[in-house]
Length: 161
Image (cartoon, one colour):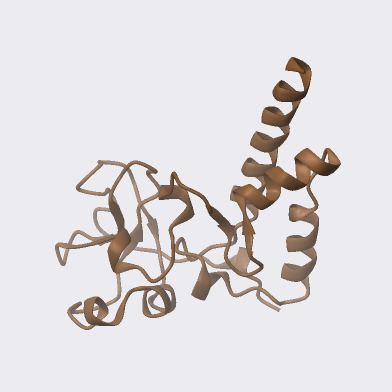
C-alpha cells in the first residue's frame, strides 16, 4: 500500500520562488484542488508544475513560474503551519496536532506521543497528507522538529525554575 510518505512529484523548469528566491517542492494537482480556494483555482490555466514554497517568511504558498502564477496564504483554505506565527500552528493536518498541543503534552508529561501516534495511523493507511497538508507531503519530519523544539524549550524553562 502506498503511504503519504511515498509521494514523489517531479517538476521541470525553474523551481525557485520568484518572491524569496528559495527552491520550492513540487505539489500534486490533488493538493491544489483540495486546498486552494474555489475562485482562485478556477483562474489557473493548468495545475501541473506547481511548487510549495517552504520559506516561513515568504508570502507565497504555491507558485508556477512558467504560468506566472503565485498563490498566497489568503488563497488557501487552511492555515499554512510553516508560515504561521500565531496560535494555533498546525503541524499535522490529518490528525489535528498543533505546535501548542505538542508543547503542552511535553510540559505535562516530559515527552510527546505525536510522532508515535501519527506513525501508527500512517502505517494503518489513515492519512490524507496529499489532500490535507499544504506541502502535499507527510508531516512526520515537521512534527519531529516541533517535538525536538518543544523538548529543548521545556528543558530550558524547567532548568530556570
